[in-house]
Image (cartoon, rainbow, N blue to C red; front, side, top):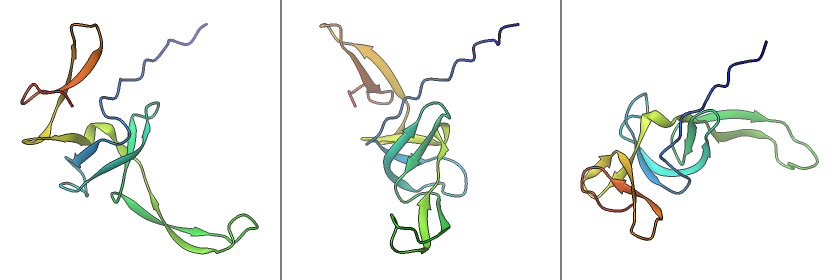
Length: 110
């Protein structure tokens, strides 16, 4: 019996976007997305959700100790910051056929 194909939701945020955290313990924090994880539907935001990790000294990593590691948060908990604050994202096709992201509040391109 074949497994049903599970489709992952399309993330509307990308690496490099400036976002605001909408919910959770980091609500209100802003930062840039340093990494997007579309299969898990999560993002890593710079300076948000930082955990301490005990790292052992190896030949590759000369210095051991406690390091700060940024942990992923759900992509649904962040919103892109537009001209008037956090906003939702939509899509529009230009006349030449290219697809662009738009700010739902103002209708401008992102």
